[in-house]
Amino acid sequence: MKETKFTMNYSFPKNAWYACARDVEVKKELFARKIANEPLVMYRTSDNKVVVLQDACWHRLLPLSKGKLINDQVICGYHGLNYNKEGRCTYMPSQETINPSACVKSYAAVEKHRYIWVWMGDPAEANESKVPDLHWNNDADWAGDGEVIYGKCNYRLILDNLMDLTHETFIHGESIGNDAVAEAPFEVTHTDNSVTVTRWMLDIEPPPFWKGQLGKEGNVDRWQIINFQAPSTITIDVGVALKNTGAFEGDRSQGVNVLF
Ligand code: FES
Image (tube, rainbow, N blue to C red; front, side):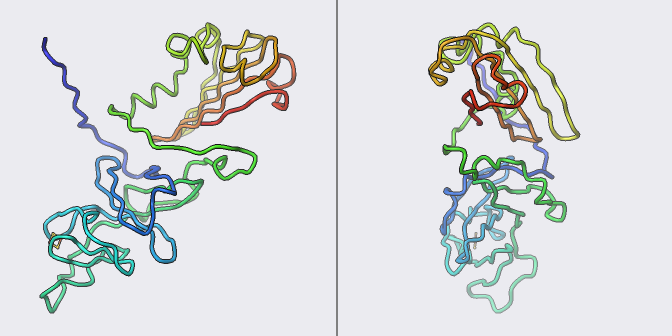
């Protein structure tokens, strides 16, 4: 049988914030990750600031993540060039002068809401106020944590999966899906760089997972509010409350709520 191969040659918007790591992943050591097809090396300085540099030495492109971090400087593991947190070479073994072009790309980075965010485009365009809002991660009223899951596919297929939750009816029918998800009307609104899908399912029988979470008998009002912020951040606000207890009007105190 002929094997079908899927390639991943596609481009990414550059002038955008990407969640490149969870905060706990980046320590005072070199850490590599590819974002938007660009290899990055990240680390924390002695004063705990996050640095993100291109993970390819100016000299022979060895990944800098294979080198060492000493006194907040990255030491290339091939011929020992030193780079500061701005990506500028500060020392070349055996050289009396340093070639002024010896530097690697330095990325604007922000630590916010338990994530490290990197701006892949022009640093002059990076606006911290545009980092997607994931404040629930810092909110004492919310419990939880996260993990990194790799999806071996075009990232837009994952966006598609999360924006269209009607698949719950057919794929997750024994836990969170039932006919109401596929049949309920929904509303879509958008701005220049975001889309929100809102679906309310009123007076429905709860699917098994939600019935267990609520711990009460009876029909429920269920909500799914999905927010996409370009190019790659999605938050999903979902939950159920006993029917006619005010959730639709804004009072979720009689329900259970999950954000992911
Ligand atoms: S490849 Fe980095 S110093 Fe030569």
